[in-house]
Amino acid sequence: MNSKMYILAAVLAIVVVVAGIAIYVFMGAGGDGNGNGNGNGEDVYTMGNATSLQFNLNLTAADGTSGIYKFAGRNLGTADLALRVDIEGGGTVYSYVMFAGNQTAWSNETGTWAQSDFTTNWTTWSTQFTGYVAHNEDWTTGDDDITYTDSGNSITVYDIVINPTLADSLFQPS
Image (tube, rainbow, N blue to C red; front, side, top):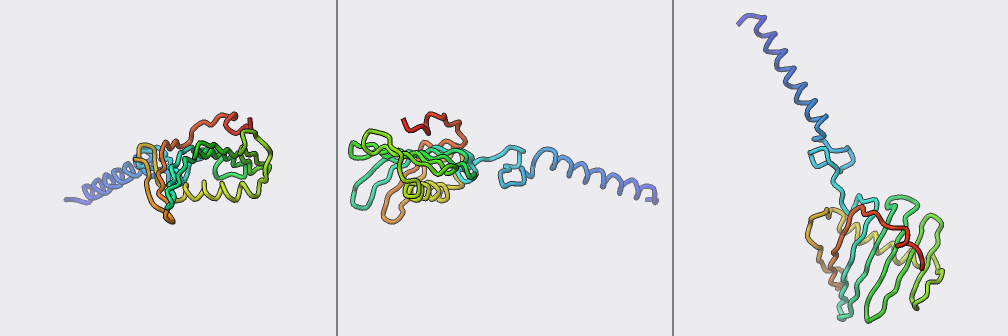
């Protein structure tokens, strides 16, 4: 082989490598750079990176008492997080709506909505919400319900919806 053939082979190899890199980059094989890539240029949303989230939770305590918790949160990861929690158990429903942005909270524990103490409600319910999200952060749409035991409590997380459009009315104390 003469030197012209070696040069031609080298140029061809460089073209193939550059074309491969271009395809990799332009087809999105690397995701979005935020850990959301699935290799196909599409974002993969999980409970951990959602911007809004809705899920239900069955909790049965070691003593046998149980309840259903319905969580909804929007503006996750921002200072304007809005959170709603509805708890059903023993024929009673308790509801809480909290807004981190203006630090207001409303509760309905007696059948009537009333403004309530933001610090107390936020400490209780945002801690639980973020705890469940952190524990299940890798869950993606299409995965099975999540069942586990924590501190003697049997927990099943179900009806999970990642990035739903949550109506303003869901966060209205009325």
